Length: 346
Image 1: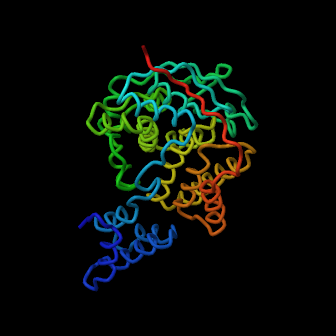
Image 2: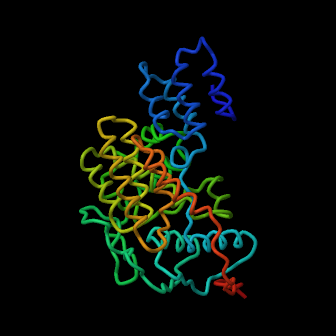
Image 3: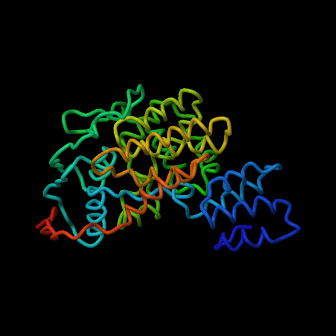
């Protein structure tokens, strides 16, 4: 029943008087047209939930950020790493060093080094609020800082954990619900192994897909794998949910929004947790917006807010303002001289 045009397929089902889940299809169409998350939730809350309604839910999620794919990295370090990956597909390059005007998330730093090698990164400043400091006190952490350098708090994952990660996480999920089901093998791993995967960022699986992406956007694997691991943490019950909430409010990082995504998935699956999850997502977005500096995950947090069950008109206005601001061109300023951070190896 899937097609290359989910919107046309959903409209056809919504117009089919003989389709037994016509109301759910209509809700899916309304979500696709308006972005009203209540309509998407209504697909799941159908009076007769079954595999068909889950399929309609997945069609409604198609090609939408977080519902079907993880936002691309936006950090300067990742932009450089992706450029290096593209150039190395054509010529041999080595970096002479990197510099950023302000600290970026530790996962972005590690992802950059996974791609370009163990390059030194000079950080001009750590503007307030300090990216190294947790938003609130937490028990579970992925990172600590040794001065200006991010260091994993946990041990490296086992070889078996990396094997299972490669088996599970090679593709985006069709929907958060199917992602939760597909992450089950990862969920059988100990929490320490899962935290180790989040912080140590294993390399991508050796498949044609990731071999191709290594020449275009090599940092995307590291962005994609973390939400898969966070979905697996949901299999650890109360302890897993506590770990996810702590990761969301720990030191600013990709694991922050990855953890919130997993909690949003819980909100879809368990209506009784929707209010709690909504409040967590809104609080983390508020913290990002309150920072008088660039928060590289702010846009993805806004996208998460828009797909969180219980998203209010006020939440939507706030999140939309963040996304609109992100799309606006910067004010006219003299273009800085281009600085080249790599050189050909002779």
